[in-house]
Each structure stands twice: as C-alpha cells, then as structure tokens.
Length: 136
Image (tube, rainbow, N blue to C red; front, side, top):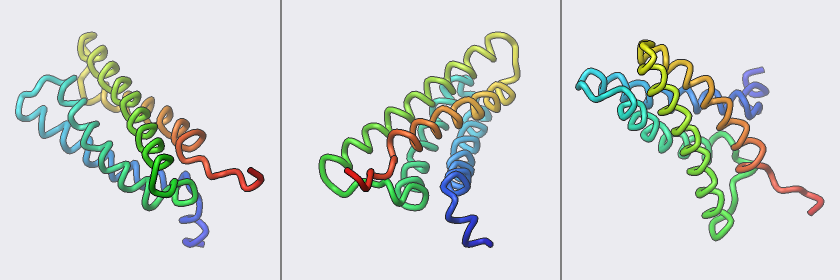
C-alpha cells in the first residue's frame, strides 16, 4: 500500500512541498526575528524554498515528465522558475497586503501558502512537467 501511495504524483508533490515549505517558513520566521520587514522576509524565504522545490520536483516528483538534458530541459527549468516567480509574487503580495491591513504576518503567510501552492501545482502538473504524449 505504501508503494501505491508513493506512485501518486500529488502525494509526492505534497511531500516535496512540505520540505520546501519548511525551508521557506524557517527562513521567513528567522528573518522576522532579525527584524527584516515581513514582505521582503516572505520573498527571501520563498526564494530559498524555490531552490529546494526544484531539486525535489525534478528528482522525486515529476520523474516521468522531466526533460532530457539540452534545450528542452533548459526550457523546463525556465518555466519552473517562472511558475515560482508567479508564486513568489502571490506570496509577497498577499503578505504585504495582509500586513498593511493589520493582519498578523504569520496568518497572511498561511493564506499565501494555500494560494501559491494551488497555483504552482496546477502550472507544474499541467504545463511544466506534463509527460510526453506517447502518440506524438
């Protein structure tokens, strides 16, 4: 049963996201403790999480859809970075807007996590790491 669960891409993505989120949140909270303003702290934490997520996504999550080395792999990396930047913009905007409205930055970050996770999952699963069509 455990083997069947590890074959489910969404579950592997959730696990990779959990690790990347740990990097992201740990960095975010540390930077808040160092009195870095909330929006830049969120951006920095998210950026470190991006690196962790690429490493896990390309090696353990979307193994069927990872392009071979060369131009297609470079394109895939660029699309991954673009999806991450989209998630970063969402995260930074939500945390910045939330804190300007008086919402605790940690609560704003939780909302940003949910929105960013959903958006980047859809982009990565449907566009970036889509497995090649065997009929093509």
